[in-house]
Length: 549
Image (cartoon, rainbow, N blue to C red):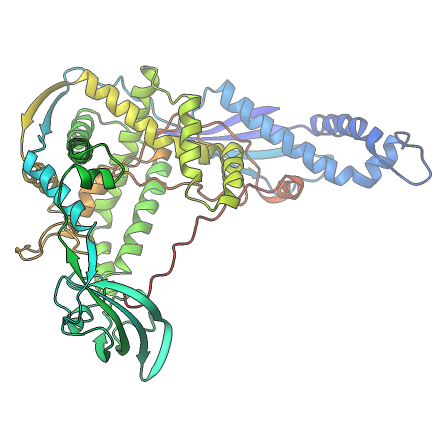
């Protein structure tokens, strides 16, 4: 095989590989000899089919496979000899005019990872904002838990009031016709919780057991069912019973009813949960400050193809979000005006990913096999029981999927290593101050008020800037693709992602195992003999909610 370098500019490389006809024919002869004993043909004893007949019957497929194998091995040899570190999959193309019996000329184009300068990790200084958990906050959590363990008693003929529970049957109708999901029996609703669509619970005040009542409501414009969004509806109600909440005494007996030893143990568990919540906020703040310091202290060229891939991922997410805005067209117009800003964010993420990977590899940070098995087991729980084994097989067969699954833990380990190296000073703050510090960086992250919101709604919330929040969050993201030492080339059909990271900062990864690269154009015929790609099983579908909820 002959190799000629045709481009060496910045991080871009291009080569022409010439694979001689003799090399390909040699592979064909070896393969014919290998498979001939396995061929069955009428008129010949098993294993006695002449090689020339094998070549006549299967020669074309064997020749294509030999060509593919030669190209794949040639690329791996090129990468090894030139000590290349591909940033993305190499582009491989068999030139026009190739025919069996002729030399094969292959064009290979790729971008290589930059030589990352020795990371400056000495002298890092971080402030850790610590939130002590007050006894009053624990008591509030205990009271909130007790409120969810109410003992309900019949109201004995009394009309329902706010705070009471109403048990009812209902039939929902739009334009006089019942709609799917709008019928239910023995549904319990606590008046005042805001669980149902606006206006529904308010009209339950005053009902008594045995009443039949029709109420009118309007579904919100953003309701999840398109056929009901913004529609006026009626609900025919049959009130089965009205119940009032008995007083829950918070004592050892209450804790024991939850399966605990006593009230002290309950408070200890709740305190631990609160400490974990604030600890995650503290870590988020520290990590952002750490990434800011790394970004400010390191500036080196990054592969344009990686930046483009990262930008495409960011842009796809932004387009999805814009499509759900009140005015999608205006949202997209605003996005287009800031396209350059998001491209810079993509470049920052790529650079940070490469930097974290360099730090991790230089300092022996790794994810153990036992840790990887735990990750797989946890991720498999997202799928239906019958699909979990398929998911495990998918991860085992797809190195890139395994790298994506490993990525969050690997990045956490690198970050923890840097936290240990840094000079950290603690400062005690309230939870509100910690959240304010994070929101100040986010450009004020909006708080979404929903049925599960755990604080009062009667205080003012000033408008917040989503745009700044989104930019800050994306600037602090680090994706798994950026930190791969040698990314695996994509196959003809891209494998589906097996798991999506949900951490605030998507992670850098360790080196991903290499796959063989398949050439384009005429060499594609041989790909038909390759085994089908593994496909990730579908996750469990969320259960449908009742229309009234």
